[in-house]
Image 1 (cartoon, each protein chain N blue to C red):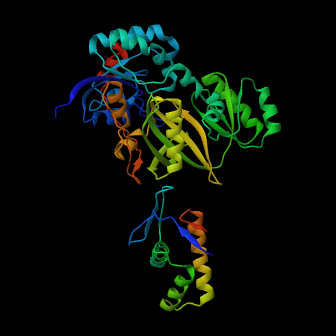
Image 2: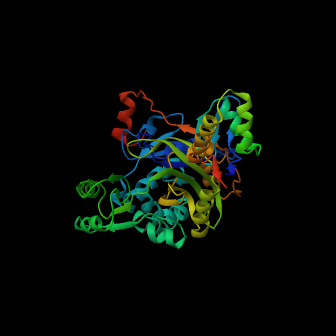
Image 3: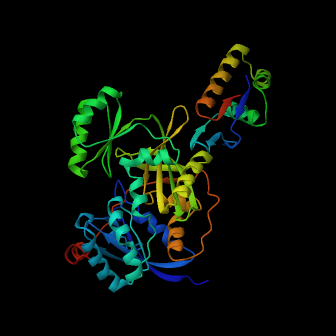
Length: 349
Length: 83
């Protein structure tokens, strides 16, 4: 059966030591049995490795940083769409999602670009600073959690709770701190980099488990695959992981996707405490960088997202292979200066 | 003491053990393989001890202690639980 040709724009091409999900998402899309994809990469920096991966990305355009606002992003997307006629857009950065969610109705109606994202309300509800309320609503355990905007609040927290604690940035980064002094220093680092608020979380000792999942936005969980981190980098990212058989993790995650009517890809991060209870640490509003493990285990979540967004009938996955591992590696791409010049000077390559 | 073993564990003849619930994997020797296979088949600790005593020249106290250590390790790694 011949596959329908579609053009998909994908961001998150920063396949670095703390990778964005763009490249693994593209690998999933390229394995689609329904669609033959042309991939348009959307990049922010000239050195995002995905720009130069010509076997995966057909053409890349730079786009304005999220802070520049929806108008300049829309202007750029209109330019790109006039050249590429995009069918589907899959943003993969937390920080850019707000703008794209805002733009989604216009993109669909005026430019014919489909997306698959939750609405703003749901996107905001699972935010790190709101996680406590979110978890309460869906009856999930979360560690003690405080959202703070000034360093003086660390004084109170130090009196109330024992160290270690976890200090988290608004969107990215987290530090485990063992004293008030370390907490204050982490507050400075994170607020300078990501702004306020800062999130203080109880440190739960235990194994780290993640789940990649996808919802159709109507209360159906299309697929979910749990993974245990086997090797963790100094940035807390999984460098290696394995699919596991854990019904409780699957039920917890699917129940959130179903009850919240989550639309699109997402990732749940849990810690299993020493007494065997799962604590939700974060819910990320996009696929994780390890999503290709789910593809390899039999659930092609990026393809399912593409098919849902483009109006195909998509059945829920019921199974996946247990004991499938991913082992990340680094690889030096050799790039001619002319290729770098192309993206650096013209913003497209 | 009754032991319940996670029936989903994968055990091959070379002694590679995989616990699909946790993602942990281990290597064990032929005695470990024997104990695990016996537990999977529903054997009791008493039967395992009797069988190993007749097979190996070992005093029963040492054997009991070693098997108990092994069972404790299995419990720590969530391969077994005490019923």
